[in-house]
Figure 1 (cartoon, helix red, strand yellow):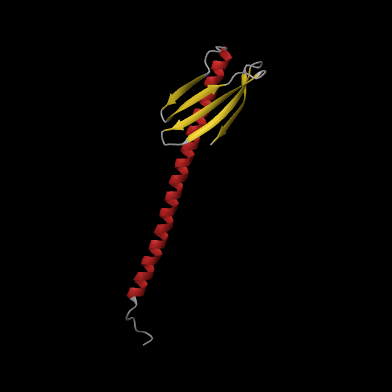
Figure 2 (figure 1 turned 135 degrees about the vertical axis):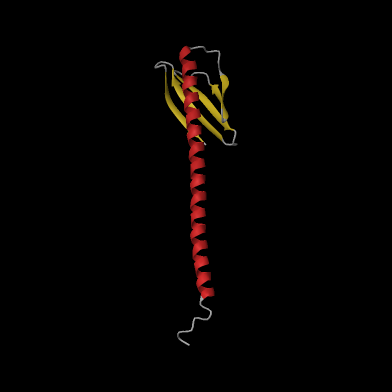
Length: 127
């Protein structure tokens, strides 16, 4: 009875299949987490790039001293940014940026332009 192997293969096969499925599910979870992280990183980098590019364009508009442009928009491959330039308060002029991505995310930001220094002094993104 001690050396009998009847019924040995079923528990062995079951335990091997169980180990395989546990390992497989861990790997699938890691893959899904990595894909989600990659997607979120891409979206974050695109948002930052579009906001920075638009802030630089608005800075150029303010440096030319046109004064007639108070709002507008810039279109990019993955979204559109609208900007609104507020009237100056002393030597500081504030502008507001609103990014709408095609994926549905909306990000707001604002910047401060110093009219004496003729440069952007502060820029903040708010999700």
